[in-house]
Image (cartoon, rainbow, N blue to C red; front, side, top):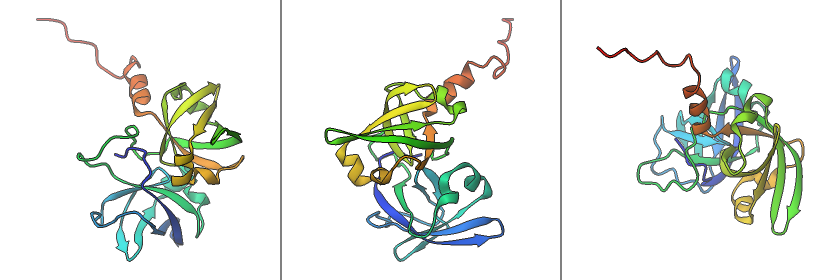
Length: 206
């Protein structure tokens, strides 16, 4: 689990093709890896990755064909900047919201406009995911926990403050940028609970 509060910006150092999937080497910049062991989870642009090995300045992770097909990881190249967050521990503050690191789909940036010192972005979600995105609800974009300011069908609006622009890769976004989208966990579970076929009928009292 993660919080959606980005800890550092890293870069993809190299990509190695391995029989249909890929092995990536990441440089993690200012991310503190002193408490990370091989096998631990690190989110890169919201994708929960397993650190297969640690390096002098980062970690190595394997990306499956499923991950490559459902996320923007297939677009990454050497030099691509990524948001990084280590997995949540019981001692950490939950400053964002509960984030699983399991990407639901890919959204696209439609527009970007200045709004005082902030930047306003409109994005388009895949139509199947739009029902999980609500005004003033939470959404995760490339691993960043954000509040939705407005919705219009599959389109939704985000206002990004200067601190977030400085500490994440959102400052790089332009119309056409593809981003990893994770919808709110609570919305997904509520939908499942309301499906009539997900639970057996209650037992009759004896």
